[in-house]
Length: 412
Image (tube, rainbow, N blue to C red; front, side, top):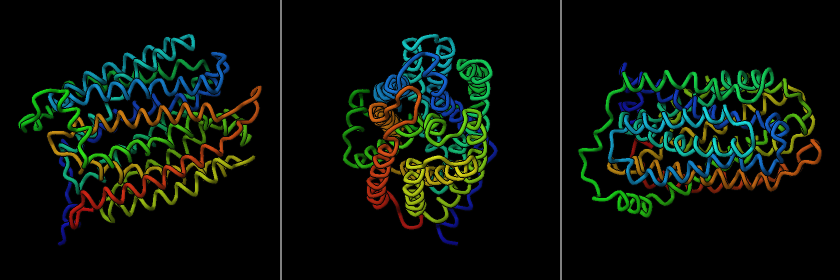
């Protein structure tokens, strides 16, 4: 049996399955909190009487605050039990989401999104560090596949329900729902998760500032940081205006959005774990190349789409998300092999910070590019597609270099 097959045949212990489930659920709540803003855009903008540019800032405020907190937390990310860090930041995330539920003006919404980002922006890096600590490289494709399935689950369960209740009552209710389901998860982590502190046995730099700077300017990490930043462009640039584009340009109704999110998400729930397994079996770079190819084609089609029926839009969305997942899962799995154990927390925190900052810039740029007059069609949406396609090609070239840097025979 060769090394690749042996690594692929590693099985999860019951506790590892529990950890995967709880990490996936955390991602589920985080992703809903971020993504729900996008489909609610068609409601939030007229309700608060704001422009697409202001809405872009509302979305990016989360990203910018998350970028700042991620960078500040990087120096301390490897100095504490990762379980304790997770509890602290997830608790703050729940508080920020509650503030979103209470916001009744544009300024309060932006403030609430800043608070949510300050805490939520660090959680993803802690999740990645925990997954890296507890699972060997040959299992991480499957782990990331299951964790990223939370993205699809948010579409199947969270987004349709959020849009439905927002349409039934108002846009505050989805945030209330997130708080209600997140609190029990916090309690489960507190009571059932074991400490994740093996990294504390490894010698580290004396000061947090030194730890941050040495990780940030480590030459081996440069390409990984650049790639992580580029991978955020598509989501932050296209998704905030996806619902408005579907309604005002493609010609579907707001009531069709839950169906689109549900069906495309349901398909992705099944494809996510399969992509993760394929990542471990066929190689991370090969699956990333496949995902990039699909993404390029589908982004070109989606951003230039005119009037179309519901079935056509669902098919395009399903294929687009297959492409996105086939990039994100192998990219995350490969990135876990880059940092040393003593710098995993800092590496992931900096990466998350750069990703959020890049995403915030992308959202602001999208808000500037997009023009909408008196509730009519969005103009220049296809320009966003060209930008996303360009960054996708660049990230593929960077991933090739990272793959050569970190992989060993049988593990790539």
